[in-house]
View 1 (cartoon, rainbow, N blue to C red):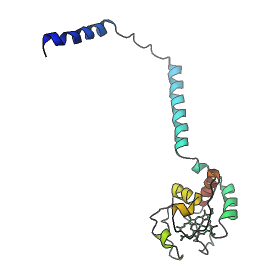
View 2: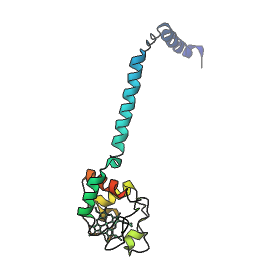
View 3: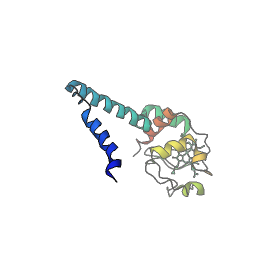
Length: 158
Ligand code: HEC
């Protein structure tokens, strides 16, 4: 680089140096605190959006839902055995199609699913789409709130 071509750059740097930005006045402490608080509140709201309120399901409402929509085929509780459908005790964290005393469809056994809140919610919302070929004949429950309630109830059978 010759001195000539470098010249304009120095000029620009000089100009910038001559006109520095005024330093930002520090925020008073209270304003800073409330900024942190509102950032935290925003983060909280965002994470609530990212994970639908599954954990906040209502156990009692879920119990009623289970009785109305699932209990004709599934049992839960101390006396539960598999019948028309597999029993659903400890279904959370269970590998799909893994109970030795139930004759699952090949589709369920080979689905590779491990039941958690997310996979259960998808399955309950649309069994045939989540596990194509499943023998669970059920239209699915579209209402996220109701699915969350059901999951809260299923979580109580450890
Ligand atoms: C008409 C009977 C019927 C109804 C109603 C029904 N299911 Fe099922 N469900 C089944 C059958 C049959 C299977 C076994 C599916 C297979 O092997 O493909 C099953 C499987 C499942 C599984 C997989 C269990 C495992 O061990 O992998 C879950 C979870 C499940 N059902 C949840 C529910 C929930 C929650 C409801 C209520 C919202 C419900 N089901 C309603 C018949 C039913």
